[in-house]
Each structure stands twice: as structure tokens, then as C-alpha cells.
Length: 103
Image (cartoon, rainbow, N blue to C red):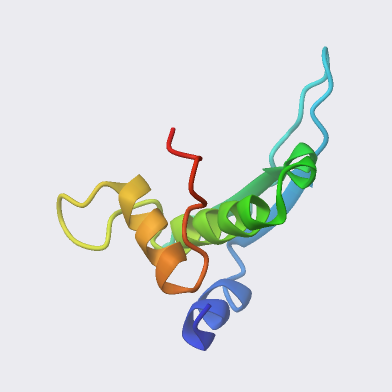
């Protein structure tokens, strides 16, 4: 991940990252920072069950979700699909979508 992207996320007081353990019958409140006048809040929430997946998949999911946060859930250009944009950015950072995960 490029240094400027890490700084974009780390230095943003409206960016939060958390995890949760999904259990039947339980709810989870997603922590979200208060937005500022100039920026919406950003959050990445990962299910702990992702750790049961192959390491290549875990790395890609984390990179993909951080790409969404960096792109503020938008595309790289007008009309760009946010999912494709996050996939492409994660791949640029060195974590392409693993083969066999084409959902």
C-alpha cells in the first residue's frame, strides 16, 4: 500500500477500523467517528471469521476494504463501479483477488 494512502487513513480522525465476532442472536454496533464539515466518516469492519479463510483471501479482503475507505466508497473516476475500483486498487497495491473467488 502506498505511503500516501496509509497517511490518508491513519491521519484521518474520521477513519475507524474494527472487527466483530458474528454470533446467532447477537447484534453488533459499528463504531463510526463523527464526520467533519469537509469529510464524511469512514469505517472498515471485518468479521473475525475471515481468519478461517486462506491467507491470500484474508490479505485481499483487507486491502479491498481499505481501498473502499481510501476511495470513500466511490470509483476512481465518474461512472467507475466502486467494487471494481476497490479490486483494481487492491491489485495495484500487491493484493489481487485470489482465483476462485469470483462472486
